[in-house]
Length: 213
Image (tube, rainbow, N blue to C red; front, side, top):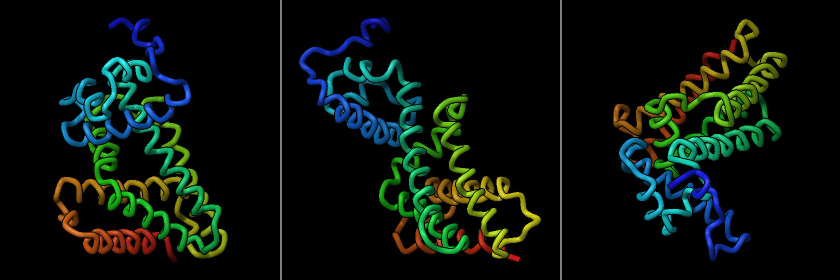
């Protein structure tokens, strides 16, 4: 299928239905990528899981790379919006950092497939964090957390000697590795919500202990 043909509008698809179809494809891609891995799946697998025509996937996405990048962008956008909501809400800097950690683990409990794709496939896919939406949203997430750390420093909650952006990337890194450990079974916390909550509390305590005077 040529690119020109793949970008044509499919017959019989009402314009108002297109956003819903695109979301269905993205959600199906998450499931298929989590089950088969990015390199082990085909566009046909995604179309089948989304219950749409094969050609419709190519209407919204040029190829599998663009589909994966769109999955990354959507999931990072969810994270960024949640971090921003916590940042704009009430509470001390410590409470906000704890709430951010809690949100990440809540996402894991609600949608482990999405977390698996976001964390494991990004490490296996060259240029997954190349310049573009995914990298920009990662930088935005880091700066939101850094702003919380900086305000905590200004209020005397956190040590002033710590670089806020370095602290933010370290926090995000700690969350990523803890979740990755659960996904691959190293930590073994995937068995129950109680175990996930136990890991969440320990990661949050560890992060805050490193920030406080």
